[in-house]
Length: 409
Ligand SMILES: Cc1cc2nc3c(=O)[nH]c(=O)nc-3n(C[C@H](O)[C@H](O)[C@H](O)COP(=O)(O)OP(=O)(O)OC[C@H]3O[C@@H](n4cnc5c(N)ncnc54)[C@H](O)[C@@H]3O)c2cc1C
Image (cartoon, rainbow, N blue to C red; front, side, top):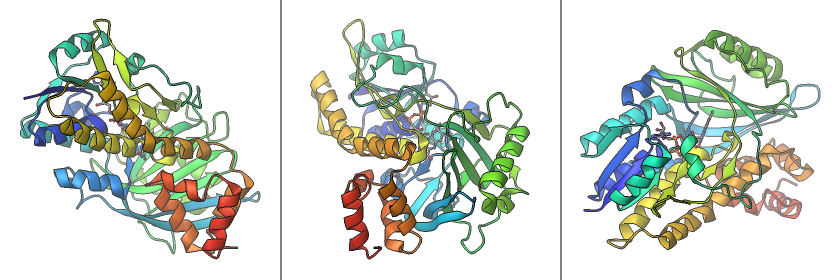
């Protein structure tokens, strides 16, 4: 039986581990925190999963929260003009995204992994450990997110656009939000405030049941970038409510009476988007393969991270099974990543564009959504398959041709 070690128990590591178990592999997951520690810990993400990636979990019996998690069938943009009133305001079809708090999901999957016969070792892994493990396992996959193990993987300068965070992030989970009038409670709203950043609000599921979540994406140094040094969760929440009142007042009444779900449900910080080379060579000559955020880290604004992690886990699973008893050598690892990158590059391109100032043709496209549902649906469904943005988003000529095709101009 082939022995596979996965370092890290997040979306990519656990999804791959559970898939490999189902195919009869001897799988060990090493990770730094127990399920109870994760449940009692701080939120780690806002983890919106798109319909196509939720669908990847279903055949493996991993969508354990389908009944409890409020679905997100629709999503859209509200963009204020210079006087602060919305000039863009629409929703498109998202097809059933969902957000299950990783503090609920990952411990649930860890328990399931053990129940199904997996070997779970709670042990923080150092780079020096990996060298030894590459001699004792047929394959070592590093699924350790943005932690220190990324230092094993070289930055790919050609594929990486940024060296600094493009947004400062702050997050809060809360109970007691009311629906947007005339819209309802099931939509994701991106309030894009020109020059300041985005205030994104959507329903999710946390440890204490259904909730709502705000992900605030502040342009560094701008008026939303005010969470440094804020330690008290209640103060964090008061600041966030005040920012909503100032910059997205149409959503303020929705959250003015809402309360945090728990003391660990707020988060603030930032990281630079980056792409890394997929293979780490250890001093003894052993090789380790990266996956998920270790290799491709996007700003959460584009909602690609967990989705990329899930797609990578699915692709790696198929490739490992198809490879049979042959050695997992450098050529195999590189080819696997290249296949993954062929899709992930679209998410990186979209993310990079979204982080910049929108050019005129994108402003026109967003405005066209006010009167044309086909525009809204095309934009929102492409979040699930960013390759589709090639057809209408990046080049003014293609945007115009698309707008003509759907009767928007
Ligand atoms: C604020 C915020 C909001 C986000 N919102 C979204 C969103 O809405 N949609 C979306 O798609 N993505 C979102 N993301 C990104 C998403 O959370 C990540 O891309 C995704 O979780 C990556 O999965 P992963 O498996 O690569 O790593 P992770 O989920 O980070 O898992 C890494 C695992 O490795 C373990 N680990 C780390 N170091 C070690 C070590 N040395 N030894 C042992 N174990 C270790 C960790 O404990 C963890 O279990 C968001 C991220 C942030 C920060």
